[in-house]
Length: 185
Ligand code: GLN
Image (tube, rainbow, N blue to C red; front, side):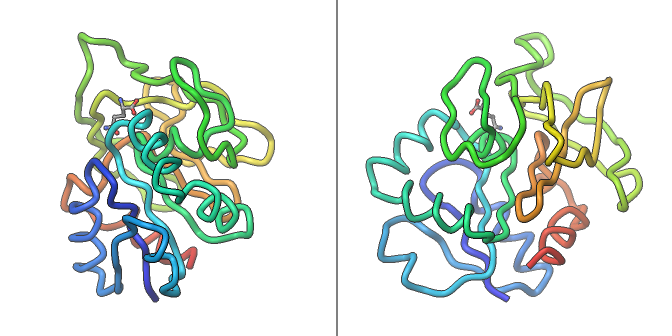
């Protein structure tokens, strides 16, 4: 099982450490020729969604990755990665737009830009959740399944091959969300 980690910008190293701990093989995607290697899943890390979206297009990674996601490649987007997958983005522009969710960028405002909590994740129980200038999912369409909510807002969802969290499990010691993703591969 090999996971490709988009490594253009943001918190990709932390995901690689989680994959390492779970015994999964991984490599980084930085340019189109990296896509020649076979892989079973893709992680879109947190960072800055606008910058990542621009880099994806500038580096000619946008089209091939979008085709793979639409073709059923398992993908996990955290935070900015979630924004990249959303069909509708309040406060930004859609990128891959492959997931039937509407997200609000920087949804928690300046006061509560970053925070930690613990909440239930469907099938995993209570898990740690670290939010950093996070979005939340303002609306999930019928194709998307809600997996976690915090204060009445959706913070994790799945639609077939696509998994998203507004929080960063890679910044905790809890491997359960990454294991959940590996089970999708
Ligand atoms: N605020 C960032 C964005 O809108 C996301 C923050 C994150 O990935 N931690 O892209």
